[in-house]
Image (cartoon, rainbow, N blue to C red; front, side, top):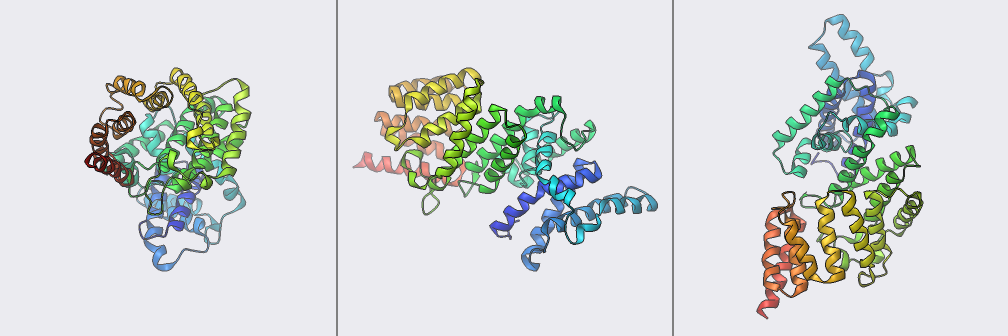
Length: 418
């Protein structure tokens, strides 16, 4: 979709799960429908720049994807059965638009797809990859870059996931109460990771991918609407809103990264902050604080501080202490070390980083080096910090993060030479 403008790309990503939901309901075959939708998206990317977008984009995608499915049917069944299948696959209203049934089900379809992709038969990595493609509308190549694996490897992973769904016979419908409860945690985790990849892209030339983070917020809103009394879902939505509220201030005029303590807080989205805080205030009193509620509480403390210097770091440290007891998450441990350094001094934070150095999940990643460099800089070891900033830059696939880290290293080298 490289030739499409950003608005049309975003439109296609939003339409992808809706079209997939329509075809899944009609064909009862997730894998075939998903392949057909991807081919329809490719066709749109090839035709729309030259011919212009159609009057009814969703109907166009449904029609093209249905034709792809029909082509597959022609190769597999006899003429009479084929003609009957063609009639059932291509809706009469596809030429001019969609019926009320299809349009009204679009939002539900996104949630149903999420729960299908989070089936317990799938590994977490496969579930996330499949969700990014089916719900987030990413191409296989884009997902492969996000996971830092070859495109062929990711294609195989997605193919195996679709085969597992096909073999399991999962119907395309809203899951029952038992399945809903069993998969809710996985669904929230996938939404969190979708947002994280959009808010801080792991690779590429842009720091943020608003198409992906925006879709994660949209679908999380749907989930919260479905279960308004579930405090951890409210906590997740609060976390996404409170974090996304800072997005406009995270980059400078040239797209460069601006760290939290240097951001212009006047550019933060106060409406999103108010909504996030209200959600959090409604969830926490229920007495079931989970990881998303606690992370949202941390985000709220950052967002409500008048300035970086007035941030309530002791309270943030206390929240991370609780978070450490709830989950075995290396990023929580990393953030706990930062909070410790802000309260007790850089030496205390560095001591905790020494303990994390043996964690295989963080070993060799740029984040551990970047945090250590920051704390060494605060401790006055400019040479050590500069070396680690450079090493961290060599370990990130994000151009924006790499430029930021290298600029930091250069600034420290200048200070050493002065």
